[in-house]
Length: 255
Ligand code: SF4
Image (cartoon, rainbow, N blue to C red):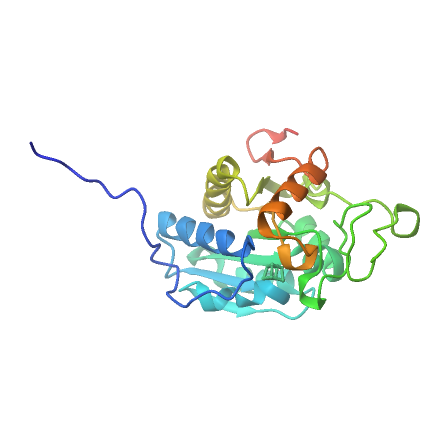
């Protein structure tokens, strides 16, 4: 009997073979692979340029085998906008930034880049804390969450409630494709792979500002083993940061 084998998985060409140094259980590793798979699927490894933010995201250039630029704190989208203007239609530009960097220090830059509708794909790794500084509160840290700067738990009275920036961006007219997924559940990772690809496709053929937030796990700063961290984030963010497509160029805001 003739058996035919088809390769259904493999090592993405755009993923470098450098061993990764993310902490065990960290979702940055999953995110890096999904980016590499999307870049391979689009066959743009020679023409795409990535910009990484600070903190743990700054390790990305070591792990992706493409051209990448490191940006100063809060300014990943300024650097990415400049590159997008320079490169024009001959390539794609994406930024990969943690939420402490993008929503905290970079909030004004994020809003103005979206308002201008720069042709970029922005991927935000939202792990509910600013990992770079050792786990301080970020704009998405949950009420009651213990962080390095809120050891008693984040107080809504003192610091306000967490802001859903992904939803906020859907109200800006020049944003086009916006989605969010959890980088720690199999079903969501499958959807996320498509969201990342779609954001690059929209950038390529329809232009406009595209945005995908990846809800992630930082077991180190949550001070939990990875499996417990997954359960905690899943339960605590349910209804606060829902997964799905929030806006498309064809339908506008859908969530
Ligand atoms: S500190 Fe947190 S975000 Fe950074 S690599 Fe470790 S687990 Fe990941």
